[in-house]
Length: 459
Image 1 (cartoon, rainbow, N blue to C red):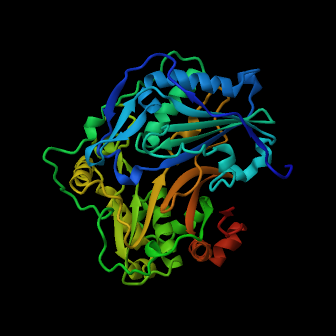
Image 2 (image 1 turned 60 degrees about the horizontal axis):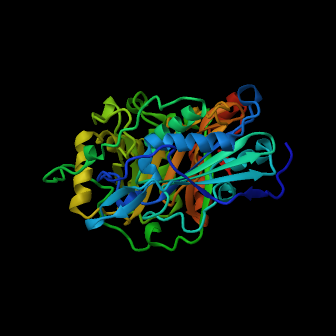
Image 3 (image 1 turned 45 degrees about the horizontal axis):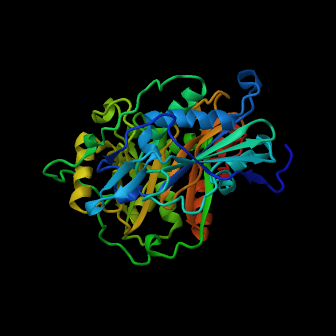
């Protein structure tokens, strides 16, 4: 593979893509789950495609995707509008058809030359997703920004930035799938979008019926904690969990948890413990980890239409004092993670909506050490086909402050999970050391397996 020297990206002036046909001019309310403070940010994803002449000879991906976007916006027309803020900071969408921001670009590089630089934490993100001045606000700005960058190999990169109040990962996938279907010649999306945000309005009268540690100030918080410290010296790295790492972690948990423990649960428990150790948190201080749990599907009993593309999740928090979390075996953290996730059901989500209204849409609690994790390994971004086949990588491109996204990654033909982390630089070094220690195979296993035991750190 040729080394990547200096990357040159040439961009045309941004343009607004509007719906291909007239759409209703109206105002739509977001749900009370949508417009919480936690979601008032822009989330970036990246999708990288190889050239595929057998499928798309002489087709220009920029032209194809631009036209497909315009056609998809006929169905997803609220995304072409702008957010406004009403009384009590309630968010509404002004469906005015102004359009989403689109940037056409080209880069003097091949996908092969980019190599791991397209993976989280993606040091080239700003090249492939240009932050056009004045476009990244929450109120009154485009709700979606798309940049399509053509590469010299014939492949292309689609990078997208979404106002998270409009959609969660499942909702964004519905929109991307509709665009992809239009790009492949469909006349309408196979799943028609459903707005109906009133399904997740607070009840009347609102009532908090569950414990919500994610929004509560913790007792025993120290002002010297990570959450209160100057976070200017933050760094990002990604860590790979493959078959070896998971095998070593599973050997550390008690038998009664093995059959009910998911890969997500185990990685989350591992990260929570290692991160707490790395941050040198006061032993008496409460620390938390929240797991994003999708409300859709039969498992959580939340009845939503198939095409619902709003935010439909909660992030129940596990909580512990730092000392027992750090000193106990991994099974201690794992049990807390599983119990927190198990609290998620329809009543829990309704209680969240009610809490947000009663308490003025609070941010998640900022006291104490906090980690929020989201499993994107089954989000479906890797199945989005605009006509060039499946992407070689698709998903979130970096950690966001306290939030880490789990993404699928193939490392030397082995399927695994890549997790970007964001920590102060000194803590990051300790975190990597703790992670290597906890995933280290015993010497006798090393002799049997004859393979490296060092956990892979990307970037």
